[in-house]
Length: 416
Image (cartoon, rainbow, N blue to C red; front, side, top):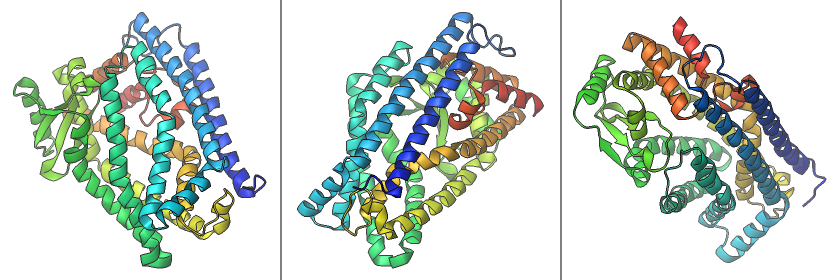
């Protein structure tokens, strides 16, 4: 490997620049949170009592400091993988033992992904059983946590192995236009998974049960009918098996749509507030946010495939990292490893679009419910129960928050 290569130096620069930026943002946010730690910001009186606010600040700072450790470890792992020569050595050994077929090359990509994920398992374990446990959010058991990891690894093999093999095979089948066919194939697979995941994958990790008949179900189904949102049923997900955090979403298409509420959400909110949260989720559908995000994702994916095709055709790219064989597989791997360091700098743009959608969904919820108070109350309760950061630094939230802050959402609701 030529460490003086402009390609290698550029990769190192990209990785270190992201690490430095993440660290700077973390420190900036920590100082901003500590600055407001004495008392609740003006406009947020009543969201939390003083003791809960102090725990919220402590949770935010603890996550930030642990995140700095994760950021450093991930950076070291990535640099070690790229610069140690381990990746080309493993590729050569795999080619020697299994040959150079699309399936063996796909297996190489999957093995590398699983290996890198396994290396950071201790960090994931500490985050769950030390950090989350310390603040009362961990409801997981060791058995469930490890079973989730095993199931996730099995799904990765089952799903990604044939996908990688298909993409590599398309290079032989479609020639120079392979990347267009690859993009179209992956887009089709993505849509297929959106249909199959609620039926085949999500039940592997969580239990889904229909919401019992009663006033809450009647209220929520009446809202769905009022909003002309066809939904087959409302399901409860046992999120409390793993965490004290809460959420709501819907899955499926057409009349097969299902509204899903975490059991923790039902425990934390009253009927009026749950109705507002559901109205917000329906707002995403009514304002066509899902379609817009899918279109954005499709365009981004097409651009990614175009860049990948250029890199796969440029032999010095893989050679700079020690790969000798004229094979596109190393370019696939290197693209995947380095793309995050590039995408990081575009995250504020993506978050800006996501926040716009959140504001629109909030406004829809206010319209369909008839008042802003239920949603505002729900948001305040969720921030309290989840120890949400009420005072993130604007630069930090720009890079890391896909949702507006509580103050921003309440101000927008007041104007809607």
